[in-house]
Amino acid sequence: MTVSAVRVRLCVLDDIATGLGRAFAVGGRRLAVFRGRAGEVFAVDAECPHKGGPLADGMLVGGQVVCPLHTARFDGRTGACDQPGLCGAVGAYPAEVRDGAVYVTVPAE
Ligand code: FES
Image (cartoon, rainbow, N blue to C red; front, side, top):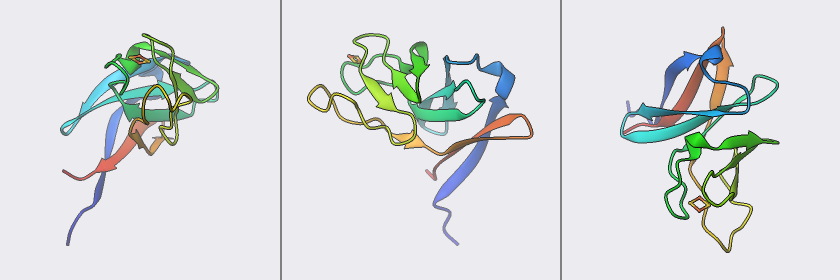
């Protein structure tokens, strides 16, 4: 049997401040994980594709991750950039809260 994706427990929800991000290493990936106002969570690649800004140091505004360097915004669910002329999308990964813990699903290595 081939496993195409794995779900990983990252932390408890309260370890992530509302509207802010936190960086995690999952397998060979570095992720930036954000908590929204309603307790929803978003997971994207940790590095901005424009000039490598640390997305976990950015903010979450209306479901969009805002890069702290030049304020490009990335959709927390799809990773699409709001300024396609500036840079491409980031990887986005399914994230959820179960029993107070944050889980993310990433492709298997
Ligand atoms: S490094 Fe992220 S917008 Fe420039």
